[in-house]
Image 1 (cartoon, one colour):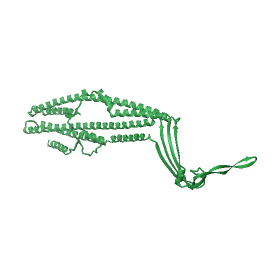
Image 2 (cartoon, one colour; image 1 turned 120 degrees about the vertical axis):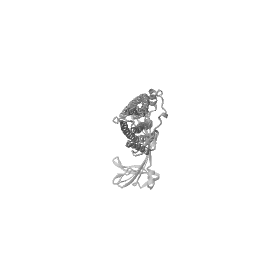
Image 3 (cartoon, rainbow, N blue to C red; image 1 turned 180 degrees about the vertical axis):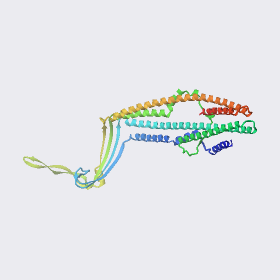
Image 4 (cartoon, rainbow, N blue to C red; image 1 turned 90 degrees about the horizontal axis):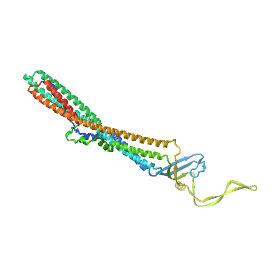
Length: 458
């Protein structure tokens, strides 16, 4: 008996020494949302979708690109500035500035921007949905830990009662008023109660480990939870929680339903984008270019004069051949063709409109449009399935709550009755009118009723 008493005392001392800062449910939920990997992953996806949305908005503006090149030509080649053949090595350079803008593509850009915006909002709603799921999982694990904590406390109370009865019985055995068997039976009951404490403590620690895993806490981190006062927690009456009304409200505000609705709207816009690819696109473009060639040594300057230059061609008139001459405009002055003068001399521009008409591309555009329509239908079906699941969950939760309330009231009444019976039995035991095994039976009945009653609020 002394060994068991010391064991109980050791358990109490260990629990007191191991007491840590206690976490309430709010702190657990907030910590889990801030540190959970799934929440971080959905947040990363939302940020990626935000970049896609921003890029699609910037895509409305004209493009502007600059390119340049520098190279060396060897052997017989064409001078890029004169288009004449030359045998000399040529150092050449080209510069080009291009711009372009889509003028009309059947609102493809507008619908793309709107689809990306809706996708971004859907990803934000999905993040909120994951946060809600984490909060529910943490709350369930927290309640499970609370239940095991209550069971541990109940086991400790029963062991303390048994120990008190054993002490009283031992005194009576020593006084010779009751047989040794009474003390032996209580001694065995105390051993069973001690084992129940160890089991309850182990279950409680395991539940704390599971909760720490949800919180992304290291298993070795000191951790404990606080027990809330259930009586002060506001609970709506079941008469105010009609399941059909709750469902009608939940469909409008639940993150999953909101995300599905946004995804469907985005799919509709994407279908419009895919359809636009079946029609022509009108664009505008502009180009500025210049070039340099080391083969060009001089550039014309000043006014030109016209002179006659003979050619290799000839005509025959009355049997006599005559060479043909052609007038050529010749500069009167030349200047050194340095790099910057060539860039200015070879400077040229171009602007225009382009029309792209899809005629045949392996049915890629039409297939993309059909896939967009099928994806839209698939999202609609997923919306319906998720709404049915939500409705089923709400009605199931409501029925469980009704059953739990009835169970709680019945178990509470059963505990009060068994506690009263145990109190009467203890009074009879103290005056020697009740055998010890009957007292143990009453105590066990009360203990079972207490455990069931403690389980009901959770």
